[in-house]
Length: 624
Image (tube, rainbow, N blue to C red; front, top):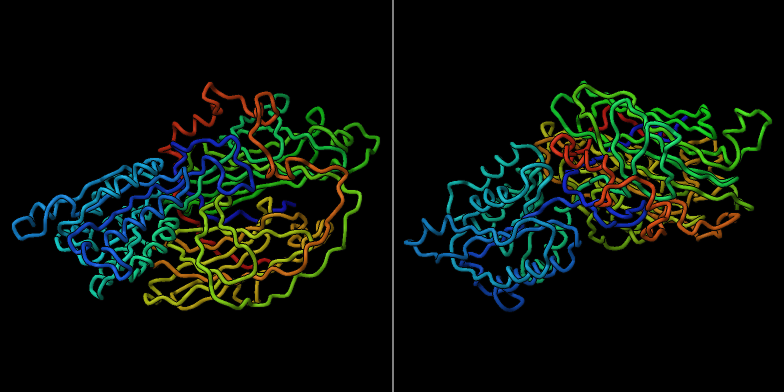
């Protein structure tokens, strides 16, 4: 029976084309080198009204420039950020209106961030003219890539003074192209009519509206809003090339890898498992979205083989329906054969004790409208044998709602970029339609986690705004431990909907012997992941959420291993592999250092573009 009882229902989106392959990018680094971010265009108001005084001193334009500098400084080095401004080329007299309403300039393209160039471009902005918001949105969208998830962050201090085009109509046009262009608007000291217009722009695309009363507030909110705009998910890992036969399989050490999987074609990977150790092997495939998702059913199969290619009769199968909604399908195996004693049977002993084992991953059932190949993310872990397993398993921890003020946080778009929650507390974020947002909590041996998610009341509510919401909890090797989902119509809703919280037992090695599969999956200390999802229903506005997180228990010594794995169970302590190291030799590479099969995926990006939406969790129910 698989430790992943059902497919991971998560948003796995982004364009695999142009993804710089990390060397290495491992399971618990955040973010790893090469992480892909949503291309984002900052659109800055430089109309004449930005010369007005800011309450904090200087002009509103001075404050806006300071906010952009703060964002640029904090932005990830691999983020793709551009800058557009309007109102810089003309004045705002009546005679200049025709020219002023076309006065939109792309000052920097949305390429991998060039922080000095962006800062210089910002510093040179001189506010003078009109406020052509609708035209600027069109220009920003045209300057972004034309496929995949894209974001626009608009900062404005007033109404569009040039309509037509009406900026809300432009936003609706962008939204009609799909959920892949999202506009986030920040109102900088605006009045009610301006606030209403900016809110309309944001919500028409599934984005967020945020008020900034003064420059100091703008400096706080712009980095946070922009960070949310950047989040997406793309497969990441050390390039590796699995083989059609076990004999030639590359040897994978603990860590995370990236390969390409074809239809009904097994790929073999080898893992050396010491005597008494436990091996973890997980594969995740993301499916592109398409309109005929009802007929999309896909399955991943995983088999384990021992010495001489002996079938160890361990097979895991995970099936997902409606994969055309953008499903990420995950299958995995916990291999304990290395801890079993020899039986005297040659065939049986080929699957017992320490040695080299082979994991065969296959896209066993492929829907007709799926592409021929997809990138696959592989996670490998090796946990040494123990001499002292430590305390016995215990019951789930009790949830105590944390008190104190809330802390704003920006979740990540993937396991790699999951936002770290530093401990017990209340955390706030805003989830956009079609997003699956990740957070992570470090649990030491002996500690337990309990949490719940509160989806806030929003003004636009009613049956026409019905959406699926969900939350899931994952362990360090990405097994889904628990989840809950329900319909959401805009009224306040809490998940889980029946129990006080989703909770783990204290994390102990002996939990793996529990008959409860949830508890059995809580047997490794490390990062535990919380995911929150809002389905991609067109009419759903962004939803503020509050995470109530309760971490209980004092850290315990944990099990005593026969030897410590210097790289960590899942490669989390690994250093970049030197030439000649097993990790460096894991995949046959081209002269550029990237697996040829990965280049196949890159060349076929138009086919395998992964959309930024999560599959609705159809007929899902909470695990027990």
